[in-house]
Structures are given as C-alpha cells and as structure tokens.
Amino acid sequence: MPPAEPDASGRAPATPPTASARWGQTLGGLTETLATWFRSLARRWRSSMQVRVVTTALALGFVAVAVLGVYLSYSIRDGLFEQRVDQIETENAALTQQVRTTLAGSAATSPGDQQSLLRDVILNLSTVGSSAQDYFLRQAPGQSLTLVDPASSRTLSVDDVVTPELRAATLATDGQVLQSVLVPGDSTESGQDEPGVVVASTVEVPSAGTFELYSLYSLASQQETLRFVQRTLLLGALAILAMLGGLTWIFTRQTVVPVRRAATAAARLGEGRLDVRVPGSRGADEMATLARTFNEMAASLELQIARMEELSAAQRRFVSDVSHELRTPLTTIRMAAEVIHGSRDDLPPAPRRSAELMQTQLDRFEDLLTDLLEISRFDAGAAVLDVEPRDVRDVVTAVVDTAAPLAERKEIFLSVSMPDHRVEADIDPRRVERVLRNLVVNAIEHAEGKPVEVTVDGDDRAVAVVVRDHGVGLTPDEMNHVFDRFWRADPARARTTGGTGLGLAISQEDARLHAGRLEVWGRPGAGASFRLTLPRRAGIVVEASPLPLEGPSRAGGHHVPTGQVPVVNPPTGPTPSAIPDLSSTQEELS
Image (cartoon, rainbow, N blue to C red; front, top):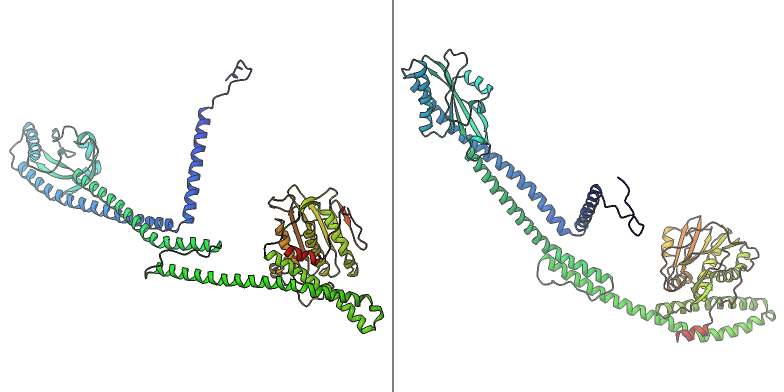
C-alpha cells in the first residue's frame, strides 16, 4: 500500500484503522465491560449474605427441577411410546390376518389378476379406517414371478422406510417385526421429519409366493403431546424457580435487614455515637430480642463511658490541680534546698550527704511535675505548637551536646550521622528537642556499653531521626506498651537519671501534635530503634519515612563519634531549656 500523500499543511492524513484493528478495539471494550461486570458481581456476592442465600437456593432449586423435569420427560415419552406401540401391534395383527384371509380366498392365477389383487388389497387397507399412514407390499427375494410392488403412498418409497436389516428380520420370522424410523418431511403434512414405526409381516399369495407387508404408523401426535408436556414442565419449572427465589428473598430479608440494622448501629456506636439504637425492638421473636439486647448493651455502654469520662475528667482535674498546688511549696522547698546545698561544705558529712540527696530528688520531683503538667495539657486539648522553620540538624546537635556527659560517664560510643545539606522543617523546637532527648537518653540508659547511633535524613515531604541502640532490646509485648504512661520494661533496672515513665508517652503526643509519627522496633538482645518522622511543612500528610526503622547505614554526611562530642552545625538561636520553667507552664495552663 503506497504511503499517504501530505495535505496542504504538509502533514500526512491519518490512516483509518483497519477492520482487524476495529474488531480488536470492539473485542477489548467488550472484554473490559464483562470484566467490570464480573468484578461488580463478585463484590456483591462477597458483601451480601442475602444474595448468596438466594443464589444458592436458586442453584439448588434449578438442579432439583432439572433432574425432576428430565425424569418426568423421559417417563412420559416412554409411556406414550409403549402405549402407542401396543396399540399398533394389536391393530396391525388384525390387518395382517385380514390380508392373509383375502389372499387365501382369491382365485387369481394369471400375473395380471395377481397384480390387480395385490393393488386392491393395498387400496382396501387404506380405506378400512386403520391408523397407519402408508402400506407397502414387497415381493420376497427368489420369487419367479415378476410383479410390481404396490404401495398406498405416491411420495414415499418403500426403500425410504425399510432397511435391509428389517427385511432380513421379517423373512426370518412368522410374527410381526417393529422398527422405529424417521419419516422424511417431504411426505408429511407439516413438511418436517416426524417419528414413526414400521410394522412388518409376511403374507402368502397363491401361485405367486411370499410377499412382505409393511405398515407405516406416524408418532407425530405422540411427539406433539410430549412437546406440550415438556413446555408445561418448563413453564412450571420457571414458575417454581421464580417462587423459590421470591420466597427465599423475602425470608432472608426478614433475617438480614434486622442484622444489617444492628451492624450499622454497631458501626455508628464504634464511631462514638453512643445514642444510636436499633429500631424494631417490639415483639417476641428472635430479631426483636436481638434488637432489645443490642439497645440494652448500647445504653449500658453509654452509661459506663459517661461514668469513665467523668472519672477521667476528675482525674485530669486532680492531676492538674495537684500539679498547680505543688508549684508554690516546691518553689519554697527548692529555695531552701539551694541555700542548704550552697553551704553544704560547712556541714558535717551526714547533713552534707542529705543536702545532696535532697537536691537530686528535688530535680526528679520537678521533672515529674513538669511531665504531669504536660500530660494534663495534652488531655485537656490545650497543647499548641509554636512552629518555626528550623534545621533539624541544629536540634539534634543540641540534644547530643546535652546527652554527651551521660554517654561519657557510662562509656557509651555515641555517634551522629547527618547530611551535609540543610534538613529544614516547620517544627516546635522545644517539643522536638524534648522528644529526641528522651530517645537518646533512653538509648544510652539501655545500651549496656554498646554504641548508640543517631541518624538524620529527609526528603521532599518529611524529615526523620532514628535513634538506634544495641542493648537489651524489646520483646513484641514490650513494644506494644512502650508508649503507655508510667510503663517501664523493667521497673527494677538501675537507672542513672531516674525517670517518671511519662517520657515516651509525652514524646508520642508531641509527634502527633506535629502530624508526624514516632515508631519503635526492637528485638531481645539486638537492641531497639526509635524513628521520629515529621512533615516538612504543616498540613502535609506523612506517608513514608526517609529512613528505615531498624537503623540506616552510615553513608555520607557527618559522622561524629563520642568520647568528646563536638558540636556539628551549631544552632544559631538559643537552645531550649532541658526542663521547662514552671512559671511559664503555670501561665500556659492559666
């Protein structure tokens, strides 16, 4: 095929698709439509018990009706055939005897008279009121006279209905021989092939020998009766299936609808709508009992949750009030303790040791009070972010500087891996620093002399910090509770810095407040890894983290070991205090 000539614009006209291409497109569209329909049907099948029950009932009903219909159809067919055959045998026996009597009493001796006799016999058979459709006479093989075989039908030949096997069986017996045949349509009134039966017997013609007498009986009426019965059975089967499907649909609907209402009510109840109830609780049947039981459960649950909310609110108020009330005596005690601690060198050994212990425990008590105030702020929904664009590397550096003395005392190798470029995000520096400080200090406390690694990285949507230790690790059950309030993996474990059991719970709340995630991985004897993932900009949904949870390899960026931990990319602004001032906390809560 020559290429298309370009038009006036210099572009070749588009070649129309070939017939095979159009057929492929049509077939592809049809395949897609069928696939969509099957997927929709599969979803409907999986999601609706009513559809499954009705479909199963219809399938079983179809099988039962089909088996019954086939059995009845065959039974009726055999009955009609046997009844008609018995009638044919009786009728044909009488006709055969009549023909034999007529031929035996004839005085015809010449071939012409014998030919006329045979023709008259066939004509008489057609007028005696027999139900046979056609009659045929055929001279047996080996006869010396040449006679024309007469027949009552002009359109149907004896060879059309008589087979060699039938002739052989007829000559071998003196009785009647039956054979089912298919009558050609050109010899029937309807013009279609019809079933029939050929009955054969032998008769003797004086001076002419043996002849074969064939009678053709039509089974068209029986066939029509059978078709009528089959149509009736088919219509009855369709009616039964329709009734079965309708009844099954109604019965299952009476069961499924109340269950569906209960499921919908349970879903709404799970969403927090405690006032939802299931309608239809009046009555004494099982569905009404289910509705009443569900409503009673929902009412009891609503009452219990209301009581728990009241108790929780009272507990939050208690913690908040106690935390506020403890502020003043704590300030007074701290002032007195600082005076005593400042002059401890002038005290005897026992009071001097007591002054040091009191100063240490006051620090721990102040940490606990700060954590309680922060938890109260989260519970009351009063926690807010003071967001500003910051380089996360600066926050990590400040945290590492703070934790370096603890790592040196415990002889822990603390390393930091950060990229060379800025890792900037919209964060609250005070809260992020508190999260990272908790993670790093916990890692040092549980490292058992093994290295602790801090890794920073980011992508276009998020920044991440992973703190990895190789110490005691966490079991799966411990990982499920590690962010619970006041929970510790081993309460008896000796700790250098104390602890309230609220650090990780507050860290998780801080991460959620940033729309980020704080995740944990651990394995007994292999250490633990905590990953903080934060969005770069407020409002971005964090879908994936730039760092793996188990801890990335140290590839690229700054790698800072400790011993002496140098400051990497020192922050330009002031470093937030490790412990928030209680006066500012009091002002925020007020």
